[in-house]
Image 1 (cartoon, rainbow, N blue to C red):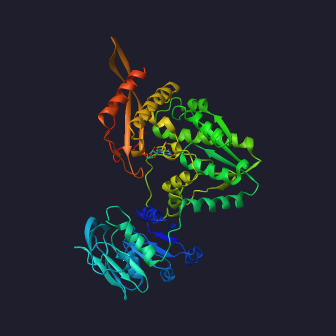
Image 2: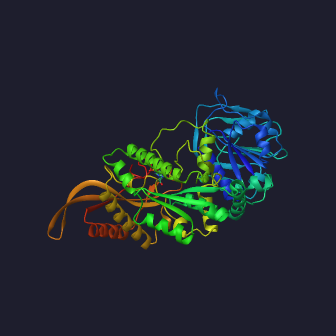
Image 3: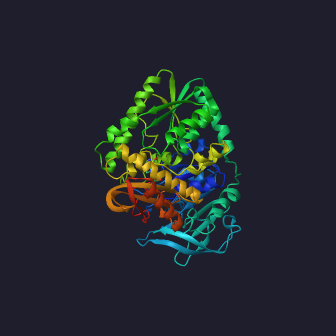
Length: 511
Ligand code: XMP
């Protein structure tokens, strides 16, 4: 596998995804990893990420010297290139001026790293410092107009450095450059596929769990579903799934989940109807963060109570933790402290002091890899392709107080949105499409009568990773069909509006 050492770059996860997209396994480590730990990983190549630091900063992150001399090829990107230069005897020029954005890259030396690429291509720059003199034995491989040393390499030792970011889509042919590093230079073979993951994981689960019982909290989303299906394949009858219906799901979703897991998979399913508990707790709460916290806490209470009823028999708890969360907690020390925009709740948000042993079969997968695994295991496409749905459910799509009546109204509106989006064959081109309930009453006219009812806002966005999003230019005919059905079929709504805000500055969900 490839090891990626993170120096606090916002792109480290992206590097990992680009490597994995080429069917090569990789993991991301903090810069504090030791040579001993890395040797145990049996790596074939090393990538040093970029980062927000200058080598001249007092707290600039460094790595163990021996790591550079492990005998595996090294690719340093941006800060990683500068650190490599300094460690191998070159010099780096510090600068207060940043170069940010696209720059034309000219290839001066067609080494293995640039094999098959164009001699001039657009590259993405984001740096202040630059390499002044490459280390002994290195050649300058590329330059841009403002950066004389944009790529360096020592083909004998297999060390390479790039000032630009091959992992971002604005760099032309960046993906091929990463491929050249892995396949030409590290001499790796693509061997990271969904089926090999499944075989390996089933064996691991069997070894770990043996004859013990496992509990798996299901949300109906793809992550917990894939965990449940993997466990079911590995240990079948020793698995119990628990689905807590908080009453904040889409229309009929609770029933559908029950149907899929009981009927299609024949799994032991504990269906906990906790709707009234959640509605009672949410009474009177209007603040978005309080709503989110209240739902997260109540979820934990219900889970604790229900799992106590099973305790004794059950030793393991399975969770759908994904690799981005694992990376986040491992490399947290170099990443800047982030402001909490929203407190997230999902089925991973279970009690901390739980006395189950934890198994997390997806802890090394990215979301798109989970989808591939799901398809390989024939998980119903309806689940594989389902739009993301927030843990606190419809509660954060009702502005103001959450009541049973409002949930019902929103479920109906949301079902119409889903039906029309699917009918127009747009569902798979969209990241998320949903309705938001606004407790804003306006005057309308229905037949000969005056109405004074609430508003539904339609939110439809495209996104790659939910970090940024663009509102979708839905065809007028689809907007019209949705608006006319909602106002005709739902008595409580007499006005529909469309949200034309991107993220940032808005977020995808309204609360
Ligand atoms: P925002 O509203 O922050 O949403 O732009 C980004 C993405 O995250 C989803 N989301 C959540 N998912 N638990 C989840 O599992 C949550 O508490 C939560 N809040 C937001 C949201 O639907 C969007 O895809």
